[in-house]
Length: 99
Image (cartoon, rainbow, N blue to C red; front, side, top):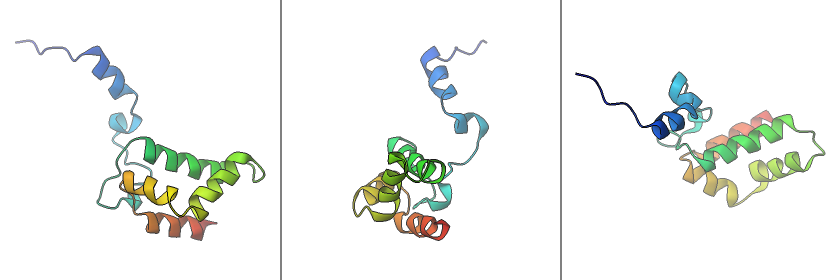
């Protein structure tokens, strides 16, 4: 018997997630609060801020925004980490040591 084909939309969505294809762990999995990072906009934003902090020129707006988010924010950082199921204190402590 032949298997039914997967809907094209499902195949396209699966192809857009490189970790699903390769089986790689999430880059922030070391900081997961309960074992797994919740993929989505919050985890993506945290990764983007880390990238901007490390890769953008220190005088750039992106770098300054990343510095504020990662080191100074008293609410946004913690909300984003909570939504992404990331241990905020552990991540902030780590980035401070890397500073």
